[in-house]
Length: 407
Image (cartoon, rainbow, N blue to C red; front, side, top):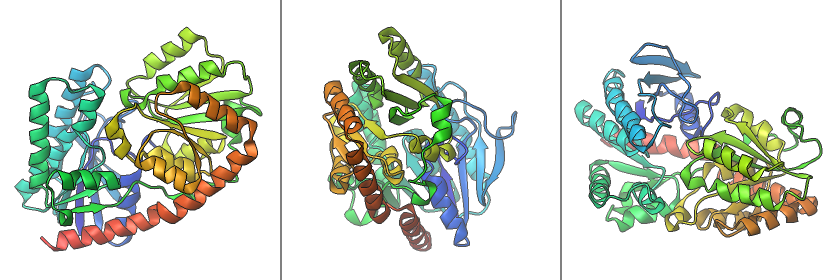
């Protein structure tokens, strides 16, 4: 069978970002099926061009996964309005690419951004194929809570669009158990919703490694390294991390490694300069293939989000990577992911937005490295058993085979 996925920010291991869909697609292909992804021709975090230049749609083969790179206007990081322009440009180009994808058995959309889900629904409608919608974040609720969406008319339109897509989807896939509860609360039948949670391929990570190349690159020597690896966006509350670094400036053996990029990067770097932080290193965006080495160079890893109720529903990808790398997580996110870390005994929870508590937790593990290592080992054992991408990929294949054949 041939599945078509429309996903603007699809990332290969050679690019920064989460590789959940690449890993699921590879497993699908290994089972003898075909998988085509319609993705942007721009890397989401960096804006770098991918695929053939000066082509409206170019084609790649990534280990058997066919990727059609569709034109996107290069304005993702200019402003909110221009960001929407970039989303709309991909919405249009992805429909054209999807119609050119050849014979397909089902169309899979993913949200956010919501606009690409419209593209997937439209392609499925025009090609008379079943439509599966994956919900990776609760849009528009996240955007409303964080203050990105404020206009009452836009909020009403967004919620109408959300209901429209839920009703038109033949099936819905979520990556957090709280999202399933949310959809059922919105009136979606429980039988129409499947859960394949976020997780990790533990084989990508070698816990015994020390990440010496990364330590040498940034002159970290024998320092205790607290790493944040992920997006630099409004939601990620990285100002709290920098304030914690300010509190720990008198502990020269503790350093912060900030790995990633995004819309807030320039503001965060300006804040670090303003505070004259001697213990913070911005390492830039790194491809997923380098993340095992980055995390191996770390002693503890950080996961932060703003203190917004809806963020209690999310399973951040980065936390599962941290766990697979056998590193403890200091978690400034409440909710379902806190339950994972505490069930694993794989780190410490601190209240979101509390830089004092964050600094104290980092200091505690820096002073007791044996406990940090014990937490890391427990975290890996837990994630291997409960959030293993190999099992999730098998669940995905079973779901998609059943879904495509039932229509």
